[in-house]
Length: 268
Length: 308
Image (cartoon, rainbow over all chains, first blue to last red; front, side, top):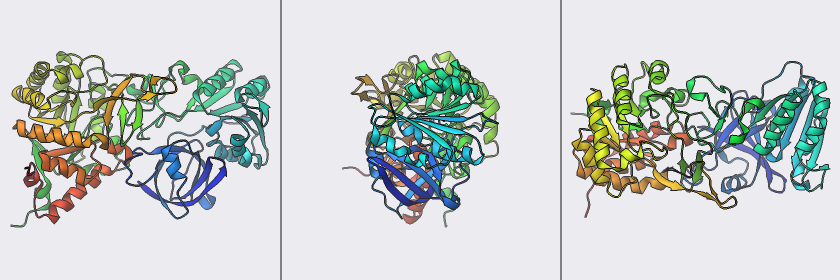
């Protein structure tokens, strides 16, 4: 829909890239996403790919996305060079809601789920609020993408790796769970993004400890604007407006951020 | 006499007047108004809204879609707001928009088809009805009506009795001989046929050894199915006298013209709307350019194929 120009496409860790896209974008809320057509006029891959906005380029001259090469689409993306055109549209979806006077904003990220938190962390820190990031990765290589977060002044970063090669050995939900009681005492708000099993656990721990929790979901989606009805998730409550959204919410248009207690996790 | 731009592109599908032959396909364009921020609906011949049932439907469990080579599988399960909410909430948003609005309808029983058609007949702003007898993703109705000529004829006859609006019957490709289905619905009184709906398919997750879709199978759409669709449109257009609306993987004006030359009086753009919400307008513009370049009209192009 909208032509963007690749500003940079940097390898930041093996398999991980940060791509800057010069683009006259409207304002972006942390947690929103864009739909990128991997190659113009391509029939294969056919559909656009959703990417959470990682950061806004200086002077609001565009956006940056963080991606990992996992399939054909992202492999093609990794070959784009500065100056290449990219077809994107957005920003789409509802981002993370700002909570008034949180004791602390806690971001819990698993793997690529870290992507929407860089912008959120910067926003929270700018407001002078306390922020912490719990990040879980498979190992040292994947955990390397958290490097930028360590440079954010005032952000507490705790890492867990499955193989124990960096930070604590175990899952991010382990380190989050250990701190949950303490965080609840601070009336913290929890933002989580990552695999659905991880999100389910974060939502459970949050609920148990009375923590407000928002989760950002990822589902296969075709359109990004709520019409293909492909990215449905079962929601206990009314996630959107109208009679058609009672049981299923669309990740793209009702989300991707949902209150943790609204999701029927067994259906994912 | 110099032909006006309108007359070179306009087509008439059983009384549904289209300013150009490009419509959007049901299930890929919401209820129309969702696309207003992204495209100019008035540059389209018409829009076909998401399939409507008598009562709202929640649709199928997730995952509902998966991408495939040059296409995608879907098993949405006809999630829709129901005909009443469509008439009271969705249709008014299209009021004053100069494009034909076709309501796609679906029922689990013949009575339901009739009831939905009656409600639409009494509403204002609908130019025609497209009967979905061919959705592969619901357990009851749909495909049963879509694969049995006798059952399909019963649905069409019943809907025709329930409305004065022009009736288009959307055919399933999941049959041995689509010409037989087309003739059956023509004999039952349909005013036009549209084809093809999606082709049943399946994708397996080899790590989990499970189907990717929650419903196991889904409907394949996108450019992957286009040659099959063109072939079927060609066959059907020779077998029936009613107008044929062609669809299946149209991404460009060239794709659309293949259908028109093969025998389609109009086309529907479907899956492509997901890739680019403005793509149907681009298809219409490309057809206009072709028509001008060849000094012809869309009507002259319909079925102008030479074989042998």
